[in-house]
Image 1 (cartoon, rainbow, N blue to C red):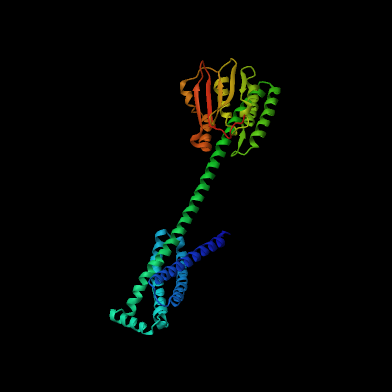
Image 2 (cartoon, one colour):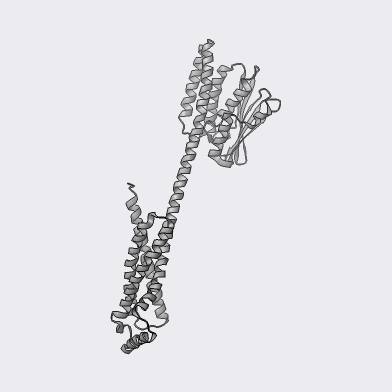
Length: 375
């Protein structure tokens, strides 16, 4: 059982009681102001009796409230039906109490001149108003008054349900987004591990134990650093660049004569926050399509700059000329980056790719600055 249920029920009772008392206090006030403007006699006595009717009204409306509360788990139309139907007997009970308090309980004391009281009774006889006609007439007035309160209560209750549903929807959406981000983040490491283990296997088979040992050490450092961070939290650009250095050191064991690395990032941008390992698929893509497909040295450049409120990160290689179809970046790694940007920033970030002049490939990330750059 939900431990918060008693507390929520208490809040419902308090809200209902306050609105009921407020409604009937308003009822007594309006009628008293009307009587004062019309200069009715016996104002004090009339006010006392209105309070008596108001107290009966509070009790009857409180009973109606419990009927609405029982129907609280039903649909909105069912609750409205309960309100309209339940208000009928409540209005009749109120009308009967009103008739008794103002007509049967010491009616003469309401008037300064006792004969006036008798003339009023005579007037009722002349008008031909029976007891049940008077009850019906008063019931109609109280019925609409009760419907007004019931509508307010049902509307408030429904609004609270809508707000709670919106909060739950928001929590579910956030949980789904977090799960998506975790999933996309963890797609990076297994893909990279698969490639690295293949390279490590090649080094062992070709009799290069020192290179294999260096790769194992760098791999250990890479995973120790990358897996220690929360997939939902960003890292500084300095931390991200350090991860890419570790990755490139691993790859440099595979391509000691072909891989060249240059990192050009202003110190002022190193404190900006970016999603962890967001650059790794781009660097891996440069290795896969730039370095591995040629026998000449290939330079991979990682640079960054700020443009207005955005941080622009580029991974450029000067490898062989590639087919124009590759520009769209339909591979798993680039698709992963786009999905992560969409999940994290929506339309505020993007990944653009193009062929570099004279050969090679350019991958450019544009994402919002995490904070303003200070001089």
